[in-house]
Image 1 (cartoon, rainbow, N blue to C red):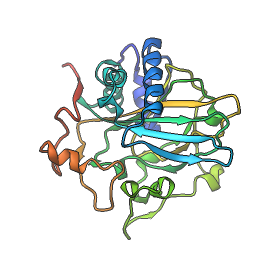
Image 2: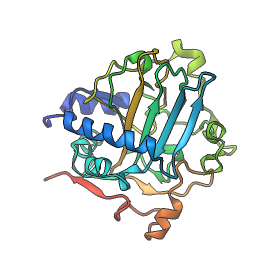
Image 3: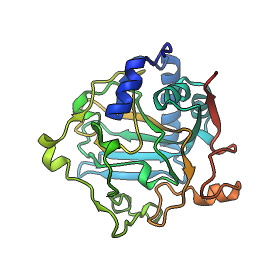
Image 4: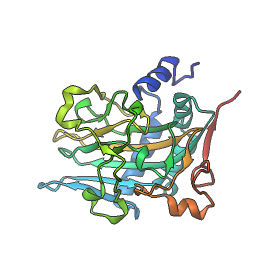
Length: 280
């Protein structure tokens, strides 16, 4: 099975490694439009905006989320870009729903690195068929890009995730895991024990990884390079709503309940639109 952007080898790599870097699959026009959106969002942050880090020299790492419902640049990309189909092909899912977006911005020279973590265990859904797409809008070297631990989506353990609320100091980000979890491995302190993947990337390249992959990093920027990333989350056939007792980040339970979605439901409605269906 092949498409113009995803080949059989990519699908196999995604299944075994949990991550694949696709080259030049997003057209320059989309990149230009998203960069315009990012500049607007940085100047006009949403209520979901967070300051991840500010170092002693004032260099900031910023984050915003669910901006696709506020700006046409993002909304058009979600509905009309090739990423929905790419995610569906990689997951081997019959359909794809969009979940949410995350916009990241790091100032030139920023050294702050995101702690290693998984995504899906803190989402308001549960399922294996998930894709996080990490898409830099500016060139980035592998030493400054996101890093993914190869094959970690297949590890049969429930890990206690880092509490990002400790970074943002925002009560909305608090996730506290119970006694049935084990500490997430110290990847950073034992890098030689793991196969950690990252790539030099250009605008138009996309790193797609399973939401259960352990990943982190994307810091260590040189003084003449900033980093702007538009990250999107896509869900496949087996994903269901799950309001987790440990907490969720971001917590979609209130929004889901308001549109009639509850635990065990498949995603849908205008909040989580179906963007692609595999043709028979």
